[in-house]
Amino acid sequence: MSYGPLAHPATLKLKFSVNRNTGEKAMAAERFELRLPSETLRLLRHEAKRRGISVAQLIREAIDLMLKKEREERVKAAQELFRVGAPVGDWEEMKKEIEEGKLKGISGGAVLH
Image 1 (tube, one colour):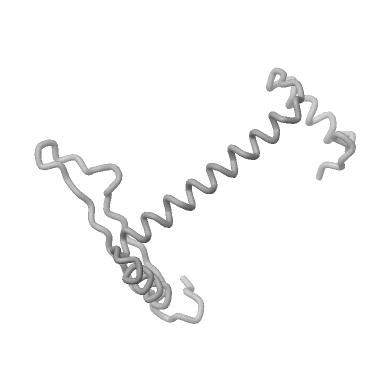
Image 2: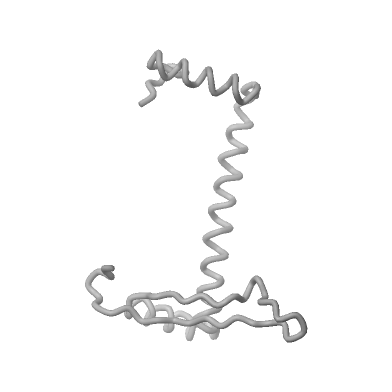
């Protein structure tokens, strides 16, 4: 596995909590090990210190932000498709029309590859 110009990645271990009554792990706090290049971990530590939070918290916030952004982009794309107002038919029928268009080399004027 290559980490670019940085020879050895640092390892960051995040802890998880266990419910002492049930022995179940908390879903939002399961243990996860992440191997990062030393320079990336140095930058994370610097940013976490600047914000006054732990590196683990900074990583959780970054992941949440990335997932939220991707979800919002998918919702926006779906809304744009709905805005077109094209009729929505039976999936099998639509699939057949798509395949027929592909065989003809056209789909709404665009060539499919």
